[in-house]
Amino acid sequence: MTTIPAYKPENFPASYHVEPSAVAKAAANRTAMDRFTPSVLPLIDKMKASGTIDAAAIAAQLNDRNVRSARDGPWYPQTVLNLLRRAAATGANPQRPFVGSTGQRK
Image (cartoon, rainbow, N blue to C red):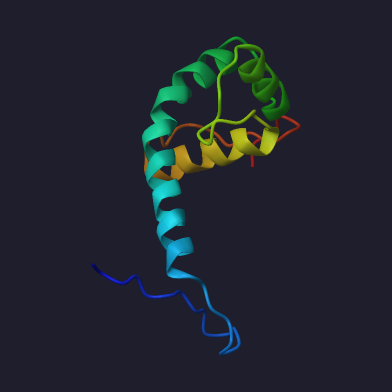
């Protein structure tokens, strides 16, 4: 069994400690989100094409359609923004603009 080293930023006190299990869980969450992102992006693209560009409106429509988030919960505006940022950062669609809760590009 391999041990995952705890992450300690240089500017944190020596007593700061992150449990290896928390690091492993965070890595599992990132992997799950990487698999989930491509499945919901087409829905968001359709909503944006129909004129819905506000993150709050997109979240409301996803909830109305009973689409669950990656962690099997409801959608919030920040959840939509996080998904779009992840999609742009991972190269899922580099042309995808960031959308704020006011519909402004960031």
